[in-house]
Image 1: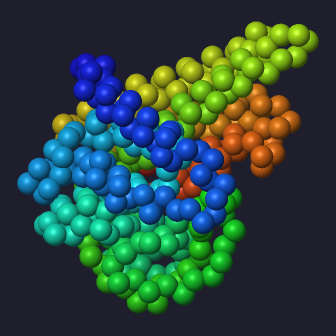
Image 2 (image 1 turned 45 degrees about the vertical axis):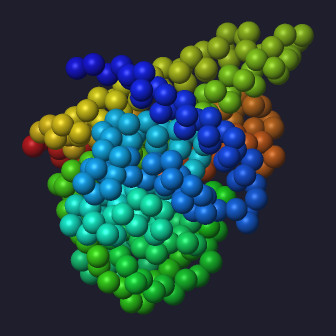
Image 3 (image 1 turned 135 degrees about the vertical axis):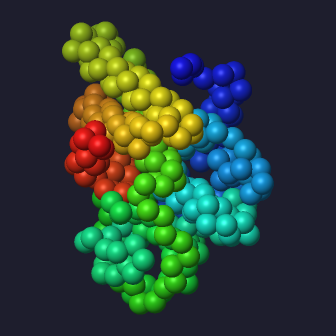
Length: 333
């Protein structure tokens, strides 16, 4: 199995990275008036929302490998989870035979947001309280539990303000007043494996960006008359971060091929990749903060955004402990 990226795939990554660095730089997170959802029509025009859809459904006909490459770059730039939710909503709509709705998601005409259940709920009859993640412009909502995915439309919420750890995202605590279930996808469906894989790709991008930010800083910060990057202890922290990212990269690429080919162990590999990417993301984000020294713990330093966003993504479909439990179950099958 060849896991090396082709020149075309490298071009996709480079083009996405350049665009995001120019149009959606990290300092945008400091402006509470901005929302990444407003950029979805532009991203749709670039083909990001339709990359993983079949051409018959109006998509780009790309493989899951190309899709996760784009999501990796989106994670690097800390794009809102609304991008991932809308991509998954397009996949679910296409899988349920609603080509028109899938096309609307892929074109950025409609957007989806994540509704994270506070307690366990049924997919077909969701109830209870939820945390709505950055859904100011959402027309549909995705509920992702251990049982699978549920796409809601015409949802009316009774919302209350909530203070999220990542204050660059609007988080609301809400109860469902009325809704209609557009589609339900059970946990065995390939789209659930793809969802876990794309979350892993975004986490991987965050781990890479946190590593690069730390390395750039230790090259410049001087102590005792020399850059702190020359000190052995600092070198070891950076090297450990690189190893974690490389290991997660290999697992994400391998899982992409397994899921795209519908292999029997696709679900296992997708969750394994997600767990590895989660560990790399959290550890590299923490190392980035610590290598920035005292300023790394202040709100003025951008290092904290990665740690906070990791906590949000980790809740989608169940936090890492739940993912590890599911992996044990899959390994016993």
